[in-house]
Image 1 (cartoon, rainbow, N blue to C red):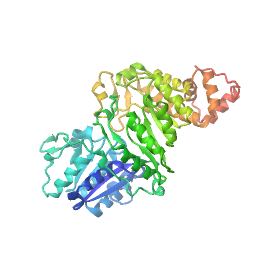
Image 2: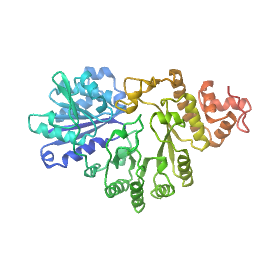
Image 3: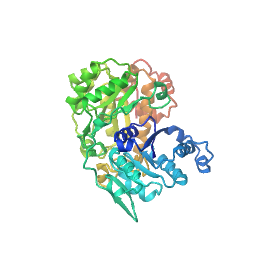
Length: 482
């Protein structure tokens, strides 16, 4: 029996490979099923002309995808759905159903499970939706198809049509043993192959779930599950020795401090030429952890800060500890470790002024590398239960960006969006030392960036030219900011 797992994104799919490895570890499936993986670059679909797909002219990526699947005629096609890929996956499934109507189309992933009922009610090309981790349900679906008379009611974590109703199966009593997900990158993609993707990293996970309950996030709703640390080290070293750039997709790798230190301590003992990046929880970055990160030759880490607003953090149930955050930044700088800080604007009970104050606070700590995001209304996230209380309005299509709230107007959102692009543009083009002097004269980096935005300058060079003519550049700048 033929089956296919499809991922549309900006890098080869780890989820598809985890599912394949898990399913083929069972003798009955391995002997009877050929499980194919198709990784497609989202960019190829974005540049495809919709009319080409509709006319079946076989020149667009949509048509090529259908041709790939027609060659194997799979009994099951699984789609991994994320914010960036769901709409494209739905269109591919629609085309597939026209030529392979008997194929079972299965949607799963973080943007499918929470929307299961909606997907089934609105999209007839979707047969089944998996809620939560996909390994055990997909194994059950393959085994059921092999019998010749599929029985969906016996498979956990599924939603599907049952006559005029949407049936929902209970979660599995069995927790996936992540240590069974071994050698999912065997063999790993060649570096030349990775080079064609816009995202340069090979993905790897050491754990799932998070002990924190930030309401805008889904990680806290996932049962905690972790790979054996010895297996993690063995697999990471094997990948890093091939020269791969590896990104850990754990919610925050360092949250479980003893486990993270054990893994890093073992990595220190090995030589490798690849690079490693991951997200770190700031409270966990003590002297020993940062020293291990440095000695393990970690190339970059991300730190979630989100907002300076105490009210905003409380509204989304996120802990706040400024002394430990400041300690983490100081230690990272002392050890020469590259890092960036995540910010979210639009959180409940925050305003655009809170966002600008957050940027200014970080800038005083000499944090310049910011990853700035607009609040997303992720389906199924706890925050959505309180959306009406905070008058939160989100786009109805992925990525579900916030449009307004009780404390954020649409004009505020637009201003923050413009600020985000201008911040990266200005700080990326002007020398850091000069920018700091200008920011100091302006009363904060946010005032400097807002002046750039409000002035409608075509580029930082034009901004600099204006300041030069006004005698404010480069020595002892004096800025008048409205």
